[in-house]
Image (cartoon, rainbow, N blue to C red):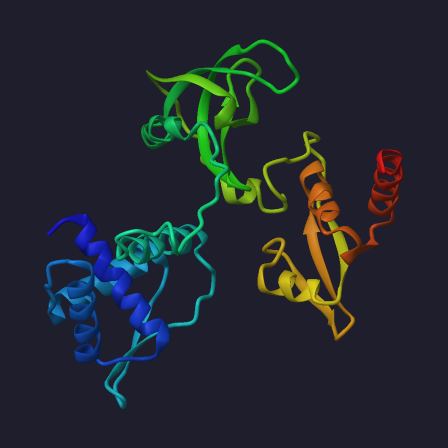
Length: 301
């Protein structure tokens, strides 16, 4: 059985248990029906299910429990949401749904803007996995010529449909972010590097909105309180701006949320995107900065 078949079975088990607890027989019946629908070979037993339980815990951080009195399996509550596993699962389930249709053009409208640089993804993944130094040419958007770079790749990060490489630039031994669409001729060298055991990409971006992090080593995240007016609050509640988002007030007129973030250009642009449906309550310095930006924009209208 291929890895695709295993992954398909894992997703079938998760989808069934996300709806409601189920017995082994109910899970098997659901999986058999899904195999018939999508054209996968059906193979299921209690032994494979036990193995699947362990693999699902390892890959997706979702634990499957068992209720003896009901004779049913269920999904344990998530203590920490697994963004990677969840996003991969969402993409895979979308693919399965679209693959059922002979022609999707009349039913599904896909985003026409496609980021450039995705052709480098596989090369960079191999370098990341093997901890190989990479070299490439990089062009900034300030009209400067492309420059040759050598770097130690640390992670790939997605933001607003673009992908970025987090890497240590060996020119000055500084951690930087490189957009894949501005990268040319990436090449994996045969030279390996020793990863810093103290570096954690999740910690690095913990208080960041987007890809920008303050260059100052002593920079600290700030407590930000935003007020969203009317129905905008419902959107912000259903799709939080950041993992640190906490609701501190909610009624028919507004939704107030608290965030702990570095105040960066990416975050300021996000606030401006919501126009007159959002007000910054604190910090005062952020209010002043936005006021200056909005006054400057008046000259164009």
